[in-house]
Length: 142
Image (cartoon, rainbow, N blue to C red; front, top):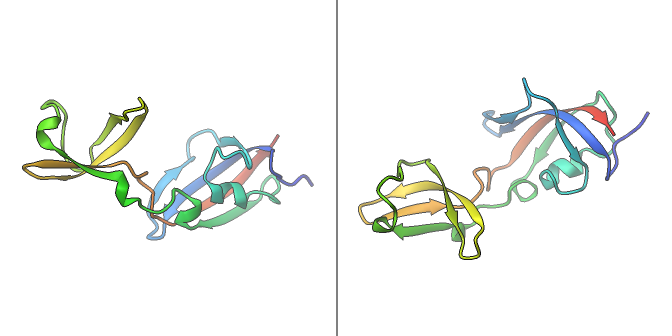
């Protein structure tokens, strides 16, 4: 029986949940997720959890935040003057926006606080600081 090893192309079905049981992502109703194991295309904990699995195997991966999207970085939050934001941009809490870094990189940010004077934007990944649980099924290797 062939087992997954680093460098293999695999296809998996998965459901990702938080510790409280809420689902944040799933391949249900979609094609399986395809990636190369050990290549960094998926989070570190997912890459580490697949070697040794065979087609048809199911596994539960409990991935600490350090092996997922990392801890929350307080420096990734920035309060900017409200007058610096064009009026047509919505500023409701949770709104996803895009900013451009001085180097020209596009950064997705989330509006996390709005006051009369400032708008606080958070560039942390939405799952940063969270431990993740994945129920996976190996569909194919190669």
